[in-house]
Structure formats: structure tokens, C-alpha cells
Image (tube, rainbow, N blue to C red; front, side):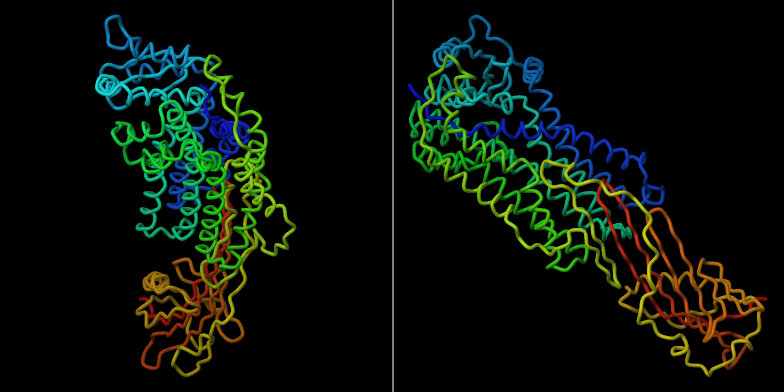
Length: 598
């Protein structure tokens, strides 16, 4: 009997793409782990912030897929080791003489000579699964539900085994199957993401950490790992599962597959089952049409469509991330499109998919003979579905290679009197080495903001010669008022007022006014008192400007001090190979009453 040819080996293509980028991925992550663990170039004042600690947890969520993929790649050349681990974990063994497995063994020997049976008489979480026993050796694990079904409805049990043999014909047991690290990734990574991705971001938000606003965009960028990690493997796995259903339908008929799908409540389900098996509704739809061109087109198109969905979602997510950092919508979209263009033309994914679709009509009949040399030969196929599916990567590459006049600057910085930031987003799918890691460097000193009022306009007292104010020591007796300027949030102004409310002041004979809370010294200039203070670290530059007016009050020894204070902080941090440039401006008019100290 000739079987219908399967879809391209999308699972093996993904393995090849991961393998080709493995050295760069390991090198890139080694550098990031050194930085995040405090072994890199980041000073203590950066590594000790809540934002940096949250980023460390977020990076665990990003690193987890790489660890699973590395384990999967390492398991490929060691199928016997994986076999022993899988059989130990699931309690699998050879059937013993006298046990009711002889008929199942004869069925496998007739349909797929060389495929061995292993059984678990006590485990009931699965029905039947295929897994590798060597480079070209395969075993099928039979669990309690299969033996029960064999006695109750042998035809349905045989259909399930034919489905597993469909995986064997295409060599998919090495990539997927029982004990596969790739499938373990799909099962566990959503939980890792929730624990190390979403939870730290929520805790950072409710903690009031000053760096939280920078993390909102980072959370979006980490969320982009969801389509990157899940869409492509899920598309490949769905294609493999539907192709195995098609093999069973070719042997027993689509109606029999439908009957099994309707009757079986397989134990391997759960909330995340759709990540490695298509939904039952889709499988039923496919079983109805398993021999039609539309079914073949679906099998062939699942991975190209998943790659397209990945591109669209990551582009939309990058746009939102930029917008959260106060980049205007137009510029944010331009930067996201620039990243998408680099992702399409600079990575191997689209080219590899197009090449596989071009050559697979010639290789499809030969592929099953490599994995199942004693099985039935593969049938011929129409190139129509492949030509149709190839339109997706061909059109995407054509758009990406077209000489568009792109004016968006992917690394341009924005300036604003309020908090702004402009990150270099992470490399999106599969290639963390495509963009060079920025080098940490101190930012340039900020410029004085414009639009600040004169301090004399807010005092409400008659003009007095500053030289007539007697020198001495004073304390803040009362904060008369504290008014924000330039859109500064009220809590920031209140923090400054609370600090100055406990300040001690010293006025020297040369007219210099100092205090003990860290404000810049105020020196006499034409038009009043002025102060300026610069602070620079490896990742930040902050300047505080203060214009002041000091004069006696009409009814006592107290002094009235009017401060027009502006502070601009510029941060330039490179965290996990992402550059964050943020500018924050605070400004206020503060009116204080000072009393002489004894």
C-alpha cells in the first residue's frame, strides 16, 4: 500500500536553524549572564536597583528556551541515552511472557518491521507514544489505556498505533516523541514565563521603584518571546500530528480516525495540550478532508504561516515597546519596521523555508525510506500546494528586499521635558548575535531646561538689597509653598519640600548660602543667588540648577527664601545587551521661611 507523502520535515528544519545559531547563542548568553550576575561592567548603583533585579528574573524567562533547545540538540546524537532515561522515567519495560501484549507486537511487526514495543503496566497518564531507541531504531510505549482500548475496541487501538507509526515514517520521534526536550519546553515554558517574567514585573510596578517606567517596555520585549518560542515549534508539531493522522486515515479511512477522535478522551491533555497537539476540532476537520488538496496545503503551510504570524506579532510588540518609552507612534512604527526588515533579510529562516518548499516535491518520496526502509513506499504528490505555500516566504522576502525609502532612524533619541527612553530592542527570533552589543559609557551632561521663571516673581515681598541680609546660621521654619513646573509630578516636588523642611542653612560673609541636605551652594550673582551642581557616574549624569531670592520678612528676624529649582538626569545603561537612554526633568518653585538658629 502506498502512503500519501508527508509535509516537509519542519521539525528537522527548526533543529537545523537552532543548531546553526547555537555557537553565537551560547557566546551571547555567556556575556549576558556575567553582566547580570555582577561580573560585568555595571556598577553597584545599577546592579542594586529593583529594576536591575527584575531584569535578572526576566532574563531567566528568556534564557529558559535556550536551555531547553540546547538540551534537545544535545539529545539528538544520543538517542540511546534518551531512550534509557525515558524508559526509566515512565516505567517502561519489555513485555513479559504470558502478558497480553503478543497481538500488539504482531501488529507492529506486520506494519513496521523493526519497531519494538515497550509497556508500562501501571502508568495511565498516556496512551501510546513513539520514541527513539537508536539512530534508526524506534520503540513505541504502550500504557494502560491502550491495553484497555485494545481489548474493548481493537480497531480504535490499531488506529492510534498507526498514528504513532506515522511519526516513525518521518523520523519525528527524534525531535518530538516521548522524552523530547523540545516538547518539554512547550509544556513548561509558559509557567517559567509567568513566574520569572510577569510576576517580577508586577512586583516592580506595585513597589514604586523609580526605574519601573523603564521596565514596562522591557516586559513587552520579554512577552515577545512568547510567539518566538511557541509559534514556530507549535506550527511544526501541529503539521507533524496532522500528517500522522493522515497516515492513519490512509490505512483505515477518515471515518475511522473521526470515530477514534470522538471516542477517545486521551490522558495526555490539559490546559497546555494544544501546544503540542492540534485542537480536537481542527483534527476532526482535517480527518474529513485528509485526502483533499486543501489538507495537503494546510500541512505544507503551517510553518510559513507561523513564521509570518511571528513577524507580525513581534513588529506590533516592538511598536508598543517604543511607544511605552515615549517615542511618537510614527517613529515607533518606523523603528519596528526597520527591525522587521532586518529580521526577514538578515536571518536564515525565510530563505530556508523557501528552499525546502522548492525541493521537497522531489525529496518527499525518499524521506520515509530513510527512516522506515522496510515500510511501504511513499506516494507521489502534486506540486500545487507547495507552489501555493511558497508564495508566503517569496512575497515576504520580496517586500523585505525591495529598495524602500526608509527614513525612520532605529537608534534615534528623543528629547522631552518628561521621562523618555529609547532602547536598542533585542534581536527577535533565533539570532541573538545579529546586533552588536552596545558598550556602556557615561552620558553627556544635560542642558538647562528653558521656561523657568525668575525667583523674585514669587516672593510677594518688597525688594531688598541682598547685601543687607546678615550672615549667620538658619533653619527651615516653614515651607510656605511648593509648586511644580514643566509638568513635574507633585510627589517629586513634595519629596524635595520634605527634605528642605529639615535643612540647616549657613549664609557666609561673601553672600554664599549653603545647606546640609545636598543642594548646590548658592553664590551671589547679578540678579540674586545662583547654584549649579553636576554629578556623573558610569551610567548617569545629573545637573541641578537653582536660582534663589533671599530677603528679610517685614515683621521679624526671619528670612524668606524663594528657590526656582530644576534637575535633569540622563541615564545611559546597557543591560542584557540592550541600551536604555532616559532623560528625566523635575522643576519646582519652593518658598521657605528661615529662622536664625541660637
